[in-house]
Length: 115
Image (cartoon, rainbow, N blue to C red; front, top):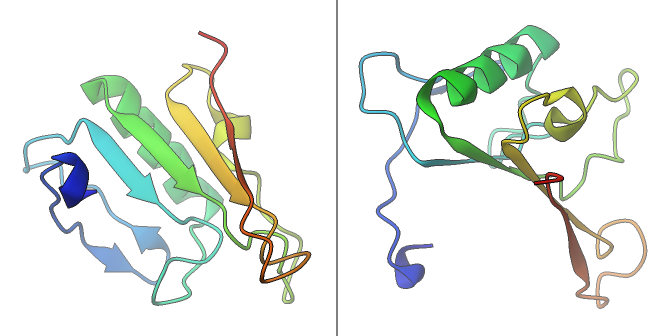
């Protein structure tokens, strides 16, 4: 991302995933892995997902949801993807077939907001 000219900054993560800092300047893009926070493995709980969507709405931020392994959920049913909860068209969903089909198949896809 830095190679593309983006200025990256770290955001706190706890046992429920990413925690937006209300005191920090809001980012234009938020990159998250809510199904399994990389590298901690934390799953972003539904209330936190809704909080993140509200944060993006308030600040006009975009969310890139990287769901690289959301199909692997062993302890409970998988939670809804951020994009399925998004009513404002602020989430870009990124998925891949390499984890569920063949590791050598480097094929990814995007699901974009309607507008």
